Image 1 (tube, rainbow, N blue to C red):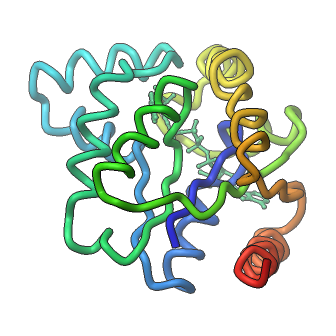
Image 2: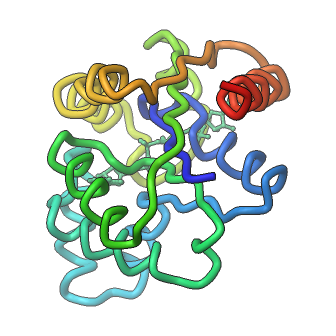
Length: 187
Ligand code: AP5
């Protein structure tokens, strides 16, 4: 299965991607995690990326295109994958479609985690990542609304969107995701 997990910061994409990856035996691919690794490597590119991430803005689409293309070409992604945090702009959605054409593959579905904003802020503040400060969180949420939310319509129009209520305990969300995937496979 080639899946996308779509949702706001703090909606549980990373948490659910890890659970789904284990259940489906396919890799969870987090662009946020890959970018944090690039930052940790301390390269000039990493330094540029860190500036963007610590402001709550999005890293350049072209960089993401290269990162994702290279990652999806690896052997373990041949049998499927779960993308967590990508695509995040309409340009990235088109970019992914192109990458998949190059792989002679298609995306199967987009799992869209819906969580109200006050709960998102509460969850993120309960964590201690470098970009989890209140002003940066506000910016990440603003950027999400402006640049990522349009993907909901984009994927709905393509018949790929599966909305899931993400405002409940982790195990209930996980069960709902598997149920939605079951319905997708039967359809
Ligand atoms: P990224 O790492 O992708 O962060 P994010 O989208 O802001 O998402 P989070 O990691 O904050 O939340 P999540 O939805 O994964 O939730 P999680 O499971 O962690 O991106 C970081 C930055 O990198 C971006 O701001 C951008 O600069 C850059 N970037 C990344 N991808 C990019 C792209 N494609 N293009 C451009 N730039 C990009 O859960 C959050 C917390 O809630 C955890 O503590 C968890 O334990 C808890 N939790 C999870 N589920 C539940 C639940 N059901 N109930 C209660 N608590 C829960």
